[in-house]
Amino acid sequence: MCGIVGYIGHRQAAPLILESLRKLEYRGYDSAGIAALHDGQVTVRRAEGKLKNLSTMLLREPMTGSIGIGHTRWATHGRPSENNAHPHRAGDIVVVHNGIIENYLELKRQLLKRGTHFSSETDSEIVAHLVAEKVAKGVDFLAAVQRTLREIRGSYALLFLNRRDPTRMIVAKNSTPIVIGSGEGEMFIASDIPALLDHTRKVAFLEDGEIAEVTLGGYRIFDGKGKPIKRPVKQITWDAVAAQKGGYAHFMLKEIHDQPRALADTFRGRIAFKDGNVALEDIKLTVNAVKQIKRIHLVACGTAWHACLVGKFLFEEIAGIPAEVDYGSEFRYRSPLMDPKSILLMVSQSGETADTLAATDIARAKKAKILSICNVIDASIPRKSDGVLYTHAGPEISVASTKAFTTQLTALYLLAVALGRKNGKLKALEARKLLRDLMHLPHWIEEALKLEGEVKTLARDLLHSRDFLYLGRGINYPIALEGALKLKEISYIHAEGYPAGEMKHGPIALIDEKLPVVVLAPRDRYFEKTISNLKEVESRGGKVVVITDDAKTAAEIPAFRVLTLPKASHYLTPIVMTIPLQMLAYYIAVLGGKDVDQPRNLAKSVTVE
Ligand code: F6R
Image 1: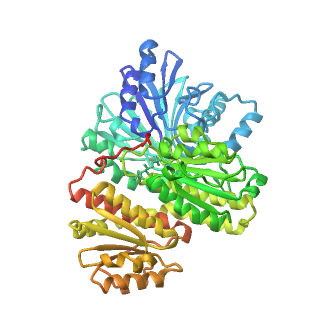
Image 2: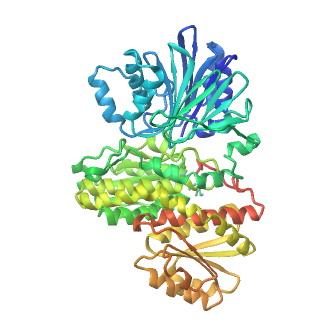
Image 3: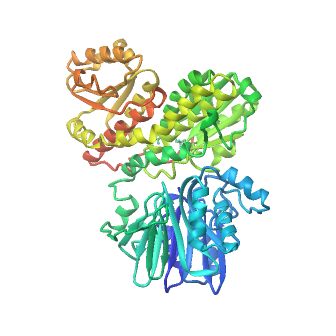
C-alpha cells in the first residue's frame, strides 16, 4: 500500500506534493520521491526513509515545475532504497505506482531481451519502460498508456508524466484507489481524500479498469475500451481526521473493512494456477531442501501466535510436515530440539517483536533454516531470516491487530501449499482446488462484513457482561482464542478462549445466565459435537451466541443469537470466522466508550522483552 499524489496548475508542484504526501504517510513510509516537469526537463528527487528525508533533500536541492507527481512507498517488490523509490523513469516517461504487477517477471524478461536497462528491483519500473517504448515510436501518450494496460495484470493506481507533454498527466486504476480533485485552474490526483482536502473538496473517483487524462482544464475519463465516461463531481464533507480514517470512526474499523483488499494483495502475483504452484519470491527453498524438512517451529507473540496455531494445522495436513508452536517469550528460554533439518518460522506484523526475534539466536546455533512472515519490509525479523514472505497488508495503525492477522493466515496457507507441492505431498489437482478457494476468499470476507449491523445489535445486548467465553474446535479453536484476545485488549472485559470439548473438564462451572458464550460452529467434522457442547451451556442458562456457516440448520440451533457466515472452504474458515469476532470486540469497545485505536497499556510494537 503506497501513496500517490499528482498536481498540475499554476503553483510550484514539489512543495504542494510534499505536503499532500504527508497526509498519505499512513499508507507507507519506507521511501518517497517527487518528479516535476519544467521547460522540457524532468527532475526527480528520491530519498530512503520517512518523508522528512525527502523534505530535507528538497530544501538543499529545490525543484521547479508546476506539473509533478509524488509517491510515498510501502515496499512490495524490492527492499526500501533510493533506487527502488518512485518515481521511476524510462526515456520520456515517469511513473508512480501503487499496487502489484502480477506478470512483471514475464514482462521484465521480454524487456531485457529487447535490451532494456533496469535501474531498480521494482515491478513498477517495467510499466514506465513499456509506455516509454511506445511513446518513443510516436504513439500518443494516452494511447501508449492504454496499450500498456492491456499488457499488464495486477492491481494498480498508476500516474504518468511525459517529458514531451507538459499539458497532461495520465492516471489509471485497477483494484487500488485513486481520486481526482478539481481546483480553480489547477487539478490534483491522490490515492486518498486526505491528501486533497487542503486544496479542494470537489472530487471524482476512478473505477477499476478506467483511465483518465488530467489537464489544467479538468479531466476526461475513459473505460477499458477507450469509451469516454461521464463521472459527476462529488462534494466531500468529511473533516481531515475523518478523511484519514476513510470516513470510518476508527482506524480499527477501517482496517477491518480493508481485509478483502489486504488478503487479495497477499496472494496476488504468487499463484501459478495452471500447475497448482505458489511462487514465493523471497523464500528460496529447493525441492531437495523441502523434502529434508523434518519439523517446523512456529514462533510468535499474541495475535500472531494464534495465526501460528492455525498454521500448525495447515503445515501438518496440507504439507505433511510436523509443526510445533511456541510463544517467543517461552521459546527463547527452553531448549527446543532443532537441527539443520528444522525450520524456524517467525510470524510478526511489525517484524520488531523482541521475544520473537530472540528465537533466531537459538535457530542459528542449531543451524536450522530461518524463515519469517512479516508485514513490514526489511524490519529486524525479516533481516535476520534466510527467507521471508511479506503479507502486503499495508500499515496497520490501530493497536489491535486485524488485517495483519488474517493476512498472516493467508500467508501461512500459501506457504503450506508451496511446501506441499515441493515435497510431493500435495498433488497439482488438490493444490489447484486450494488455490481456487483462496481466490474466493476476498468475496467471502465481503459477505462476512455484511453482518456488521447484526453484530452491532449483539454488541449492544452483551455490552454489560463482565466475562465472556469463546469456544471453538480444531482449526477454529485458535480463532476462539483470538476473539477473546480482541475483546480483552480493546474493551478491558475479561474473556477466555477454550476448546469446546474441554468445557466439561472445568469451565462449565462458570456458566450462568450472565455469561455470554460465543461458539464457533462451522459445518465441519466437529459440528454435531459442538452443538452438543452448546446444548450443555444452554441448559445451564448460559447466553449462547453461535457463529456458523450452515445456513440450512442455523434456525434450529438453540441459542440466544445465531450469526450466519458464507460457507467457505475448510482451511479458510478460520479467516472468515475471525471477521464477526473482530467486529463484536470493536462495537462492544466503542459502545463502552473505550479508546479503540489506542487501548491502555498497549503498544503497537513490543521491542522490549
Ligand atoms: C493483538 C496484538 C498483539 C501482537 C503481538 C505481536 O491485537 O496486536 O498481540 O499480535 O504483540 O506483534 P507482532 O505481530 O508485531 O510481532
